[in-house]
Image (tube, rainbow, N blue to C red; front, top):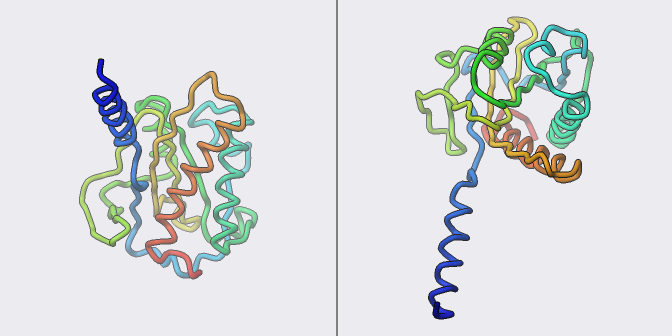
Length: 190
């Protein structure tokens, strides 16, 4: 094979591989929830029913929660107890869409029709967020109404052979991309 043809083939394969990477996270929000008043957040306690929706190791839960905490702290939000928080943050790693995701959605009172999908340019769309295999979902729960008022999804492809630093890096990237949508939509007073 000629070197120029080999180089062209390499460039095409490289660009093709990159085209599968998402440009931005999908997100949508409940239009009647006043996100401008959000100053504090919480996670459900480890013994809450929320943790029955999927089996994640304590290490994986810690990785996800730490990444979320770091990003929310950067957005100026403060951690509180569930009883005192303006929002509760939940998450679900979609290993396979199905029964566990359905149970999680019911548990957080997720209503796709109630939330508008918005892009970074604030264009409303009517389709629901896709829950693809190996995606991480973050939901923001209204603690008063006990329902999801914001959801974002981003691919989280973790290979068994990856070490803990590689896994944490991928989780941080996913969380950063998702919560960037939260901030870009003017949900946080920066």
